[in-house]
Amino acid sequence: MAADSFLERRFRLSERGTSVRVEALGGLTTFLTMAYIVFVNPAILSAAGMPFGAVAVATALAAAVASIAMGLYANVPFALASGLGINALVAFDLILGQDIPWQVGMACVIIEGVIAVILVLAGLREAVVRAVPMSLKLSIGVGIGLFITFVGLREGGIVVNDPATSVTLADLTAGPPLIALAGVAVALGLSARGVRGAILIGIFTSTILGLIFGVLNTPDAILDIPGGDELTTIGEPLQWDYLGDAFSWALVPIIFALFMTDFFDTVGTAVAVGEQGGLNDENGELPEMRKVLLVDSASAAGGGIFGVSSVTTYVESGAGVGEGARTGLAAVFTGLFFALTVFAVPLVETVGQGVQYGAEDNFIHPAIAPALIMVGALMIRLVAGIDWAKPEEAIPAFLIIAGVPLTFSIAAGIGLGIIGYVVVMASLGRAREVHPLMWVLVPLFLAFFADDWLSANVF
Image 1 (cartoon, rainbow, N blue to C red):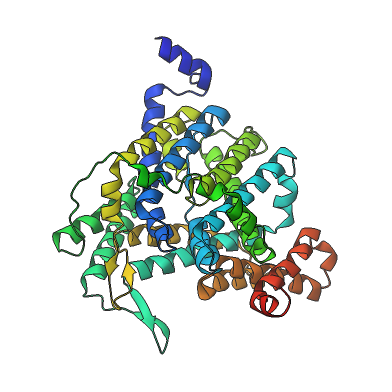
Image 2 (image 1 turned 90 degrees about the horizontal axis):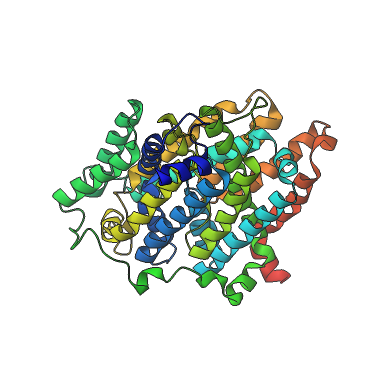
């Protein structure tokens, strides 16, 4: 009774028409719908040279800490974990694209998170949100969705490199693409029927088939206590040498792309999930938005400290809200479930193991491909919010949506869209309507595109 009384006072359960049992169920449901990130994040970041097992442990720990902090401080049923899309930006644009150590890439994430915290504390969130047109925000989400889908198709061995056409359809009768496609089919079918955890079930379908048919190696164990080697990413990016290297003009556009992707996604997620749960006020705004943004921004920096990319609020929190979750207690339960996955690293390594495919040095991760493809399918829905009849929306949106996957760079796609937006608005005689921040971004992205020339001739 004392525990119930404490939880009642702390989370205002009766006031929001819920109970401990309902919040526990909501927290579990949210965990099941977003647990795929524990398998996917290590696979993506390990492609950039990071240790798989250590990233798996840190991913679970970072999600646990951030989700519990959100529940206790903001008292909303929002769970957090490493952002899918943001991790791809860090792995491919930052670490591999800029040819920098992973510790420097994570130091950039820390800087991005600190900037976000300062903006929230200074009350400048609204100004930053208003500076970027809604069509650009939506198209960034769509472009990242296509980018993640492309990564998923490659990781599943469904598309491969081709000297004549750059990419082409692979041999779909081979083992890796077959188990990946089976997982996608299951995830799609279950998602269409509204089954919770469809993505996670798709991952396990591919894993089980991979084990049965010998595509994946059988693990020696399922559970284990993490050792010292599996905690090596935590805190390492805080070393001054890495933080100092992150303060580079060449990295400014990518840090901004990190900020854009994280910051605006959080605002949209919080409003949408809050509306679903009846938590928003009469103006459609979440009363605890400032607290939500503060925890989210601090968690972004925390993700860099843990070495797992930016940690952000997940739209999958809506699954728990759909089961009746209305308070931060649900987020606390989700965090506790994530904490327990720390002991399942052997299982995570089995699901995310690399499989040699094609060239001797080419390894793919077919069991996590269903998650990447499914998340891409969910993000593509944002395209409906763009008014394609207006050139000031259509042209920049097209540049971003096409630019992100075709350049294999989220930052490059965003840069093309922002420059395109300014050019179109100037051509229409509406240059004065462009927010000053957008004008500031143009030379930064021009410098980003001319990085090689600047490095050779200026710096």
